[in-house]
Image (cartoon, rainbow, N blue to C red; front, side, top):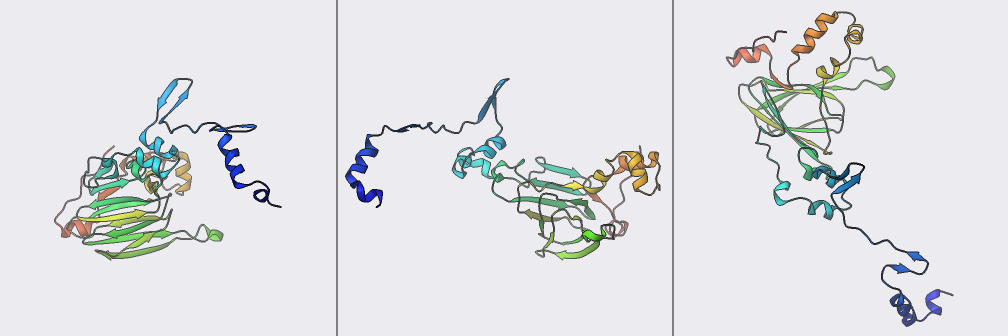
Length: 260
């Protein structure tokens, strides 16, 4: 026999109505507290950053309440903000850190402006796969795919493509890749990601951050500690001028060597 068959509906209503709001016989319910953008610790109350508040927000609605209208816009054209300027152009990353409205949305984006003969030096994105699309001109891309797990010392497969405007390619998560502008015009490409935290690791900076004594052996003792330190100090920024043939055809001179 079901409980609702024993107790008339009117009686059930009376039982529920008789219980004071926020209580059930034998159980004390805690009132739901509103989301507050702060926390208390031994040092007192601390105000959270907008990014921290968004990460802690219990719902999408709560996230949107934390954002002003202007927080939903990101300016890729403002090269003075959230960008890396160098001799060959600049990169602008829209991530959960630089554009908090992206937090929890599962997307991110980078835009690169590369001048004549500019190239984006070898790097990888450990946080996600890149979907690369040039807006104009032509770019050459190089990607190193991981070797088989059973033969990790094998030479990686290199995928070399020439992309015209509106032709796209992908760089799988963690793969080392680079882009080069072989023309005498300024070009732009967009890189889309399925995460707001795709990251970027420049390969040479990463490699030469190891101690000299380790690098000396890892490089087959082809460089001594002095030479390793000299190379380390001359590693350029992420977007640089390069490839002599392109620079000659564009009437450009190579930047002077960096001296230690």
